[in-house]
Amino acid sequence: MLRIDPDSIAQGRSTVDHASEFGIVWVHAVSTTSSDPEPYSEAKLLLASAAAAHSEAVRHQVPVVFVAILPMPGIYVGPEGLVYDLALSTMTSLMRTQIRQWTSGGCRIVGLVHAGFGIDDGTPGKRDSGTIRDRSPMKDSVSIDDLVDALAYVGSPATSYLSGVLLHIDGGSQAYSWVHPARDH
Image 1 (cartoon, rainbow, N blue to C red):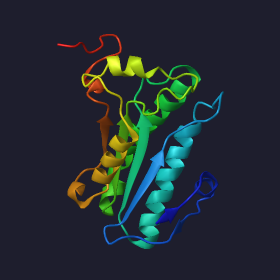
Image 2: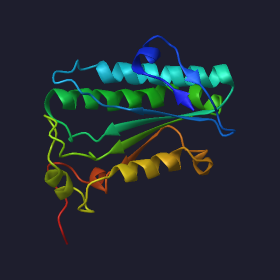
Image 3: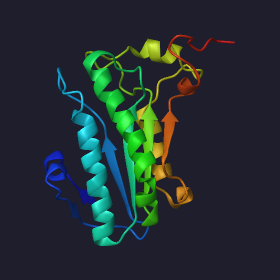
Image 4: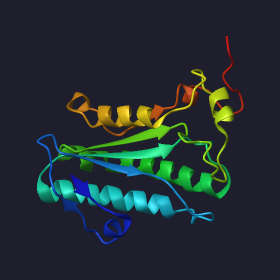
């Protein structure tokens, strides 16, 4: 088990209590609670978290699966939308530029992009769940259980060759645009 907090990441400290024979699944959930977030705040934290995860892999000689959980573009608007879109761009860039470094040590890096679970929690800048459902061919919202299932999947030995990808947990929304929503047939 790995215990870490944002201050520890910023200072390059972490504690590994137990690593399975398969290794460590390091989860970084991108989120902002600020009403006026600094645009690059989550992108910087994401980079620091990925660097700390890779350092743990090297230091403890165990493979690490780094998984970033990010909201799909268009879920948030305004300042929050900018924060999340920059974090997603950072994750994409990180995978493209450092994939060789990650995979050479048996580590993997994966992004889970979700379509806004808990969307009606009153957070300013979020689209409502009806808007999200209307743009999903499955006509449903993603649940936390959907994310947990996807996380268990990417962290399992069954996906040992999966790295450098963004998996969209969005009911097919990625296949449609915000301008042309999915229609019932």
